[in-house]
Length: 134
Image (cartoon, rainbow, N blue to C red; front, side, top):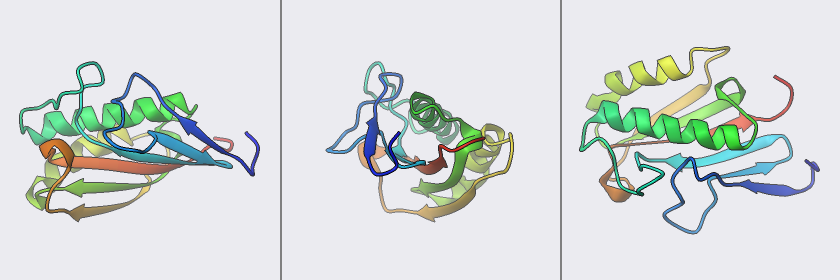
């Protein structure tokens, strides 16, 4: 990719955006992945029925598909942000998150409690990845 150009990435293996944004945009060697919620990419419906663990697994699955579409994996992720409707869910989310990011160096991370998320979700995760050499 040309360092001075932007490139967007979209995959049908992750849910279509619910607004005017891309699943991911690369600027040079940096990949900025939009936040993912627990939408099923095939149906566009929320999964988990309010179960934070099922939602988290779907969110991370969606995020991994976006990374894969751009030629990246969890080892390329530099920073994540986790948005939770209830910080009491942190321990459960953290357990699943740590299984997903168990290879290489764990990304830097922020976790914040928010008043609400799209589609009534309980968790959303976005990330920034480096597309240079692994």
